[in-house]
Structure formats: structure tokens, C-alpha cells
Length: 331
Image (cartoon, rainbow, N blue to C red; front, side, top):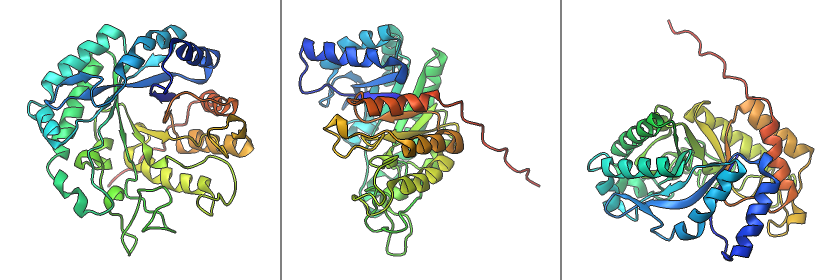
């Protein structure tokens, strides 16, 4: 159970003392944090805090997280444009990998997360500018993963993760925002493409440790039925979508990205409106024991309500998910 971390508007020492105390008080309900502190620079090299990432605000507090017993797995953001992407892969990322691995070893990071969101929009045509980028990007990720594994560290990535799923009720305006289809319900745009011109099968075949699928952002694990945001149960949509994306990315690699709906909060800015109930427990049971989810990460920051902490902890106390059934023999 991980949280991606940004600096709050208040970065004063007093505010950070309060945040650290909150995390320490609930540390059994969390395993790792992913501060958003690194980037691919415009010249393709490993960079600290460029592109608006709050390196200076977050980095000094990561030793506090390690002292609490949490793994620190920093997030690396993508380059500002395709020129930076080309600079990165011109040498298969050799300069970048050397700098990133040295930084991870020096700071005792447990690994890295990659969030490279060079992308099109809701039509296939909008993704054509990325033709030819996917193969060198995946080659780089595999080489980077090998280098991290060589020093006993991990590499994961964040993707949209529709993996061909199209909202059957609203294909032209998907409830989850991205997994849309054409007039015939065929996947297009985000449903048929991935960041940097890749595909879900490429991630399934990669040497990455896990792949966080963010298409489940905004989907509740409990709450009103029908949910007023969708006029139907978001739990049902969550199950339909994650069934498809986890199968496409493989049971071993698939991880769930969540965004402020774990569990349901009538008003996320008011902690007392967050509700952890039997429906939330049943959905988490399904995610962990039936779907086989082993990793979940929340955008963004640690919980502000006890209900959220309880949901995190409930997921962590589940027994290890069962392995998938063996594939049938081929003849």
C-alpha cells in the first residue's frame, strides 16, 4: 500500500511535523511512499526537481519516512516534450540509468516509479505522432529494470490502463473519463493506446516489477448505489474495468491506482464524510482475493481521515492473494 506524495501548500516545518506524525501514527497501514521528485530532463538525463516537481520540499523528509520503516520509491516524471524523449532513448538511456541508479543506491531508495504521460487524446488519430516511440521506450524500461534489479531494487510504471476496456453504457463519454470507444463501441484513444505509444501487452511482457493502472481513478469501492456521479454503482464499473486491465497486464504485474475514492467520501475535503463499511470491505476482499491485486497506490498523499487509514489497513491484512490458475495445455 503506497501513496504518491506531493508537498502541501503549507511546507513549513510545523506542517511537515504534523504530516510525519500522522503517518507514523498509522504506519502499520502503509508500506511505502513515492515522492514526486525526479524527472527526465530535456536533454534526456536524470534530473532532480525540474518541471515543477517539489524536490526541495519533499527530499529532506524522506529520511523521516525511512526512519518510520517505510520504503521510499520516488516517482520520475516524463520529459517536457518528444525531443526530450528522443534524447533519452538516443543511447537507450545509458546516461539516465547511470545517474538514477547511483542516486537510488546513495539514498537507499527501494526503487523507482515512472510516470511518463506523453500521450494523445480520445481519438486514434491523436496518438499517431507517437508512432515509433513505443518500442525504444519499452527497450529502455527493460534495460533500466535490469540495472535496478542488479542492485536489488525495483522499477514500476504508471499507465492509464484501459487495456481495451470500453464503458459499455457510455462508450462515447466513459464514466471513468478515458476508456472510450467509437460509435460502434470499439476501443479508441486511451482504450486502445498507452502512454508514449505503447500497449498493455508490451507491459505484460516487460521485465518491470509492476504496472500501476490509473484507469480506476475516481471509482469508489463503496457508497451510494446508484452513485450520483454515474447514476449507477461505481463498484460494478470498477470490477468490470479491473478484470480486463489486470488480465491484460498479468496477475504478477498488475497494480491498482486509486484517486481519492478508497473508501467513498461524500466530500473528500471533509474527513468525517468518508465511510469505511461492509461494502468497502467486500470490495477490498474481491480486489485482493478474487482479482489477486497485490499492490495499490493512492494519488495523492497520505490519508486525512480514519476511514481511509482503515481501508488501507484492511487491504494490507488480507492473506496473500492466491496464484492464478495454470494455463490450459496447448496441443
